[in-house]
Image (cartoon, rainbow, N blue to C red; front, side, top):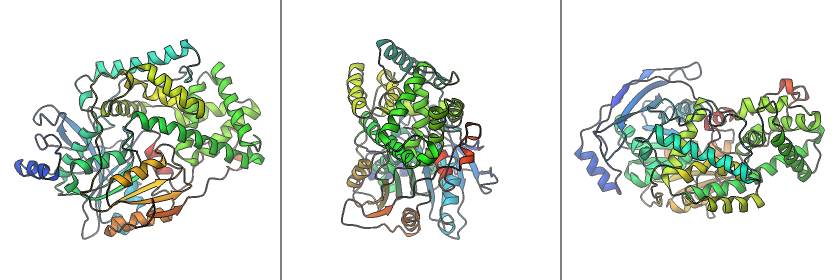
Length: 534
């Protein structure tokens, strides 16, 4: 689930026929490049803002189906913060994850957050992947799909399960009706081919790449298909490439439950502020009692049990939300006041048109990338088993992905990203990350020969570089400057201490009427860009 990105304008350059099916090896890619006419270079237009005065915009046309390079074309939206140093290190493509996340606003964020002398050496390139945001066509299978109040996520009765299944089927059917000719080409491999089209349009022989979350899988697949085109590769908060995508989502459920318990423990430390007690288990019991009450009577006719989960799931992504969540929780339990819940839902969890688009692309990519169980009995068995041990997000996550059980396109095989043909690669992973659990970083480190893994010990946030941890950012800056990576003897090549947990807001800000999202000044912008895509 994602927030709206800035609206960016652009001009178009046509890349018809510049790229065929993705090559399996470097020689095939080089041969394809040699055989084709060089693509026209992109013409950039100014689209600066107060925060990013040098920002430029453009767009590029690419084939919908790379097997038919002169067939139907689609448009990708691009943004750029150009280099200012006398000598450039080339383009640095950035991606915030999702799938379905807009990368246009990530480019100015990265350019402004890196040390000036480092950012000056790169053209930082943001892009909206196919189907996303300002790219065309932009998918929106079923506007308002997440409008409240949804059925309870926990299918405790056959009627509730039936209602949730009907929703999931209706979404998959809506996508099939609206985008029948497009859906077979909304997938990671097609997006990777788009990245190489962007490289060609930029006139670059190689790219540098920096991806968060799902963007780590996107980058790893690009590196697998085009290893000779990779100059530098940074992956932050890493998807387990061996679990794409059903197993990865199951593993998320356990990690989010653990992170939810960490929030309960944090609240227990500040009983003087929140008055919810000092025993995390008893506080958690109060949370589930709140959930049960909202399942019977939604707050403000808007926040039922499923919506409550939507409010608290962002706390698993970033602990900057914890003060707001604790205030909301306390206001309901201690004052029987629902205003804070409604306000928190509107500011944190409500899905707008950008969110509808992001979710439509999310399902389109994940449901196409890999096979999912088509027998609902398998989903029911697996998710009840998870729920018994980790109830917080188990069924909410299951229904989020359930359209894949009914998806109208054939599935592809996941890409084996194992790679021994790359220059040094830099990986970042927090040990307690819920959205992309720690094992994903360890697995990617093993599969990318010669890569270096930097671990944030005890950290639970998702997207950890450029968020205020000087130790992590030092390694990032060194790598982007001269390709230097740390080397260690253990699983991790370097270990950084986690950033400090947030403190409660001042008492004057804890009433429902003044409730506002609490954020650390550093890292807030990135949190808004990465959003909550699972």
